[in-house]
Length: 233
Image 1 (cartoon, helix red, strand yellow):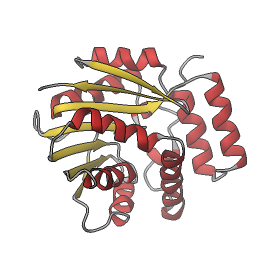
Image 2: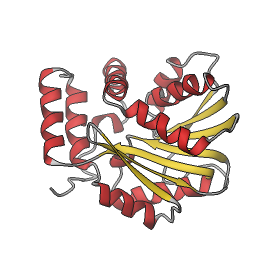
Image 3: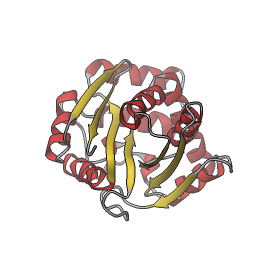
């Protein structure tokens, strides 16, 4: 099936000025989906592959949303005696504010409002750069721009974890949002997200266009995938 992407039909969470209660509920629902269907564990796996035995790292988390992936990674690596600083980047101020409110004071997380297509960071300014379950929010050309920025800013490596488009996936997301997660914003955005997602071949092709090297693709259950690149030694 063809990818359904249109700038004229954005996901609701990408629009400014949303009701705070509804936005928080939607972000919490997405965090619950990440935890239940493997998005969180996929990000952890990409981190382990790229971080190696490092004991102190900085990670830029693009289109970070509620910040749940960053918070989870900090907790995850703490068990490995690793100190991780996460810079959460999102274009929406209200989303960043809610993410900051949900973040414990002892977590080394900083919040930056910026466009993932043009990051305000110097070349090699972070050890790792991740984009987790958000690349499908961009057009094909903009997705490549995001991945180029990831390559520019990442000193050690970069990784994208995202959905995989397909007819079975579309049906399963429709069923999930019809029976369980029926919040209007979550239902609209989840159904749109899966139709906007990239196939395995498309995502790997975007990584190549962005100049990623040493690229490895991983396929996960529940219609998820990842590409990672060890950019520098």
